[in-house]
Amino acid sequence: ADISHELRTPLAVLRGELEALQDGVRPLEPAAVDSLYADTQRLSRLVEDLYELSMTDLGALSCRKEATDLAQVLTADIEAYAPQFAEAGLDLAFQNRLGPSPRIQADKQRLSQLFRNLLANSLRYTDPGGGLTVTLAEGDGHLHLDFQDTGPGVPAEALPRLFDRLYRVEGSRSRDTGGAGLGLAICRNIVAAHGGSIAARQSPEGGLWIHIELPL
Image (cartoon, rainbow, N blue to C red; front, side, top):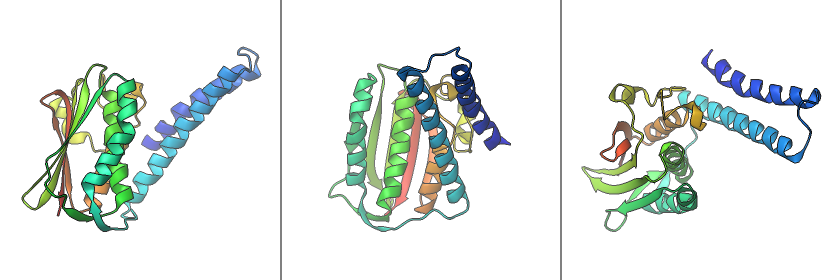
């Protein structure tokens, strides 16, 4: 029922736009085609996310683990997102507190998927003028990753449910910004596949704090 609801809304929008073109209410021009294309892109992303989530829920997440320099993967992803953060008027800072970077057994592609999901979340939800600070450190036989962004924040009562599939926080961090409530559920499954843990907290900066621990 939840998935049907998620698919019904974008399909209704797409159908409405096509009917307007058929009836002549809206002229068939490049702007209309671009809008339709954007709708199909959003629908495609939703379907891909649903597929990815179903695979990870079934334990079918394909991971090809090898000795991996996590700092190197994270740095590349942060550099890839830096222009988008700058364009949105957001700061993006990375604090690497590791010494000679220890390697972990991990799937580089899945780690990149994890990091990019978290970066995309902050980019989508953080108010202009704020930013995201990513910290990487080592302790107790684990690598510790912290993603802390500025407001808007998440109510304390919503934090335990953030990793539930299709869950959205009411208010600023909502579907209005384009999220389907699947990204963090996928993140949880990727972290679990690597024997780690992930938790959501309220950030001292006023936004959301995602803390990840991955075993060395």
